[in-house]
Image (cartoon, rainbow, N blue to C red; front, side, top):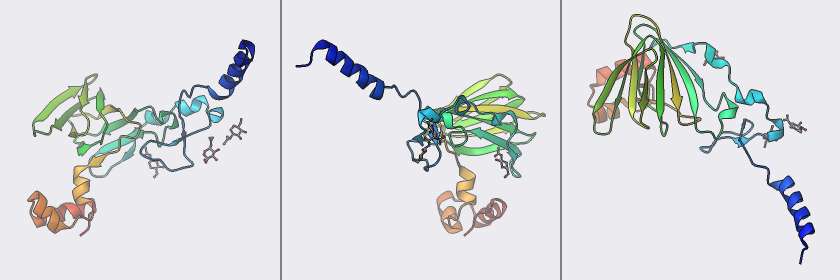
Length: 210
Ligand SMILES: *[C@@H]1O[C@H](CO)[C@@H](O)[C@H](O)[C@H]1NC(C)=O
Ligand SMILES: *[C@@H]1O[C@H](CO)[C@@H](O)[C@H](O)[C@H]1NC(C)=O
Ligand SMILES: *[C@@H]1O[C@H](CO)[C@@H](O)[C@H](O)[C@H]1NC(C)=O
């Protein structure tokens, strides 16, 4: 049987070599992302810069269609977020700009309006619509998975920040799913009751085929 001092020394060795608490799992981008996130970077190689992201000080790239510029700090850009279940984006909406109906599978979203006026809406599973005009400083929470949209509701540019309860919230935009994909027009007509001419027009506009 081990004597107390031997056991103590054994535990000390054991804890210093194996019991280090893993405080974080900074993304190692060498392997592709899985639904559980990225592999962890060796903690010896982690630096403070892995926990800092400096890309959000400017608007994202312009989109021709919706007059919105999106810039994201998701885990694919910001390695320190890996495994932490949150992320952030900014949206700059020009006058008349909008973000069409979309969902983030599995992520709750909080929107903070930093400049201007934004009309926000989401629709629940009973098709009840929740609409609100938000001004600077107002925040609204969108429950996970629900379709929602934003429209600039003022005469000046609007800036908002969106916080997500996922490091990789993803986005599925309804109009893109329908009119930027190769889902056959006939099936879209059958499943949405839109007429074929309108579907073809929207596909021409957004780049869908079939
Ligand atoms: C990242 O993963 C690759 C492949 O497993 C590994 O060779 C490399 O050492 C890792 N880098 C760090 C910084 O942990
Ligand atoms: C990670 O850190 C170890 C130990 O400091 C070093 O030998 C190795 O080169 C580093 N790897 C990378 C990918 O920076
Ligand atoms: C904007 O586009 C450039 C060129 O394609 C790209 O390098 C950059 O990452 C994009 N910025 C954002 C915020 O998406």
